[in-house]
Amino acid sequence: MPPVAPRTGDAIFANIERVNAELFTLTYGAIVRQLLTDLEEVEEVNKQLDQMGYNIGIRLIDEFLAKSNVSRCNDFRETTDVIAKVGFKMFLGVTASVTNWDADGTCCSIVLEDNPLVDFVELPDNCQGLYYCNILSGVIRGALDMVSMKTEVTWLRDVLRGDDVFELQVKLVKHVPEEYPYKDDE
Amino acid sequence: MQFFGGSEISPSPPAPSAPGNNGHMMYVFNRNGVCLLYREWNRPLRTLDAQQDHKLMFGLLFSLKSLTAKMDPTSAAEKGNLGMPQLPGQGCSFHSFRTNTYKLSFMESPSGIKIILVTHPRTGDLRESLKRIYNLYVDYVVKNPLYTPGSPIRCELFNTTLDQYVRGIG
Image (cartoon, rainbow over all chains, first blue to last red; front, side):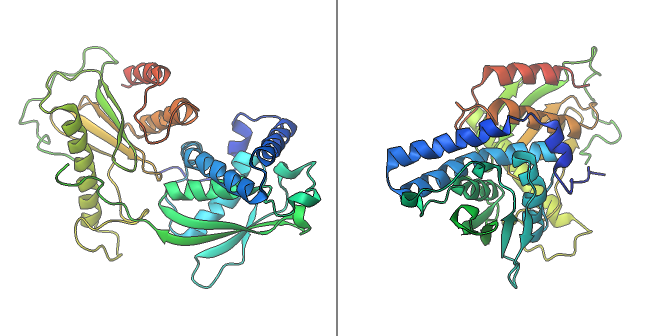
């Protein structure tokens, strides 16, 4: 029997090396601050954070799979459930919930009530267009890309913009089938 | 799976004299068929150049996986023609095959990392060992900031750790 995939990430979270939460929050804040100085445009910072997240996600997926013993998910519902219950717990120490499914099961929301990235953060007036946690959407997109799912991830609600929770919309664009990568004449 | 070797008609190599030294070679492929790593410990005979050899190994696994899924008597889902591209999560997969002269163990992560270990035919189930190797790959390669994802692995520390680990496989 293969080992049963965990339903929550608590046990894994307890066993992996962690960094001090405040150090983590402040480091992330410093990165965003520096990007704002370097790129000047808030839009550009959003893009850059998303790209950084993507680059993290394509690596993080392997750590996630190796440490969590999760095998292939049967459908997208299971996938988002695993992200919310195991993934977020494992890497951020918080648990998210999945809601707002559309009829065909390809689009849903991941709701985060607690988000360690935004402790001590307030958006100043000139940064109102900033998606401060845009790195997270990039991470999810990158990680799912590596398991053959093209997705679009967008923020619907953001506590820093006055909402009561963080809400990420994850939309499955398509499954990419596995194909033989070589051409015959290579 | 057993090819030819069932009744020991054809000669097997002698059982390894000492524990350790069971590994012949190992491959790591990524989802695009790039050979990220090739390690060799004991391979007296070589018939192809390295690149051809890697391609052949990847092709073997790819076809065998497609075959095993096609032959699966338990899955009711519509399988399509042999060689049809598969969606992730579709179909079953094999984890090892044994011939009279070697055993090939195979693991594929959902992210498409394929780890192949070729050992002495009398080695036992290596599924846990392959998982352990996957963990080593994560710790030494994926977490290495100097490593560019998708490029061949050049990391001495990973190689040494791997050599040491494979030597310990019984």
